[in-house]
Image (cartoon, rainbow, N blue to C red; front, side):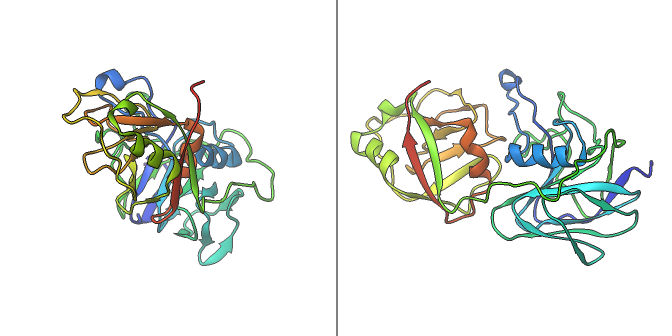
Length: 289
């Protein structure tokens, strides 16, 4: 194997390979997938000189540890965390040169959920349907990282960015999601619709890459029965029989039979990816564009 690779010393709770996903395959039952915090992934790629569609690592809560086989430039962004090389602190949110054989440690998130690690040249695992993303729902793409795994890297194409640090938004202390009501808002009572757009929910610890689950007010239906399965889109807010909204994220199913009360604006989903359990959530109704 080429020296352009990194060895996974500690995989962490859930570390996956992600790029911009595989849109355009919903008719085959394949979700989009891709980095949940797409702006964070794009920024770290830019910092190391990668193209925007290069594959990065997405860690969840407690980071990971890597040992490169050759010198490589890295950048870490998304959820803030401590970054060290052989135990010495290095910059978060800026390009860092890491020597072959040293130990790069991405620490637990100080706030937020998902940290992104870009390596110059990108992670070159075998693409599936045009993407290297791990899809937890369908099982497409590479498996989540395990200790001892070796990830091949591409060649560095251009010099990395010359910056001291790149500003990034902080993870939300309150998650405000703009939502367009429908298409099945008529399945809910007027009181439920008022509660949905005026009450505060909380991010549930059961949230994952498939969907952000909530706790709080129960949304009562105006009609019984179930829908025939319908197509689901990124950001759809589905309400299961328990009455608590679920916001579909990148690995969401492409069809579903529970009513969709509204759809969250795509620009708000990066913040949803960084909302820790217990974060207050408010849905704000907006007009259709």
